[in-house]
Image (cartoon, rainbow, N blue to C red; front, top):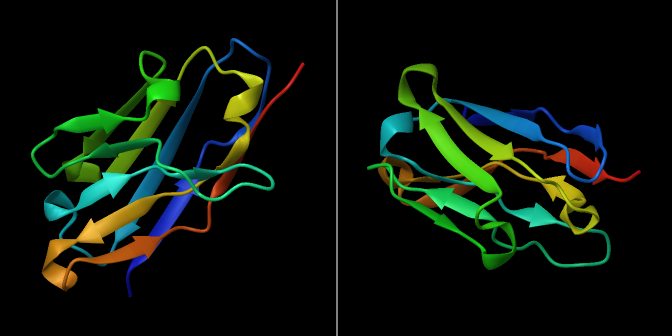
Length: 118
């Protein structure tokens, strides 16, 4: 019954912006640690950003200063605001939830594709 649904991906020019959204159902959302890993073609999935239940954020070095992760607990939604996008940001971005009240298990959305190209 747990479901994570991402949206907001698409094609954008270098220097442009996108905002990804992920709506989570079937969990105590406010207690979840939420993250946005990504997977580029031919590469393994990598850490991008994470936000804890208390609102503490952590970012991978390549996106620091450009990406912002946030959450709206009233809407069971986590966001990733991506500014000054670069071609190397091209990847499938996944919504991830670590659910403390479901034994600390990770749940995943199917991903949304972000393509940065001129």
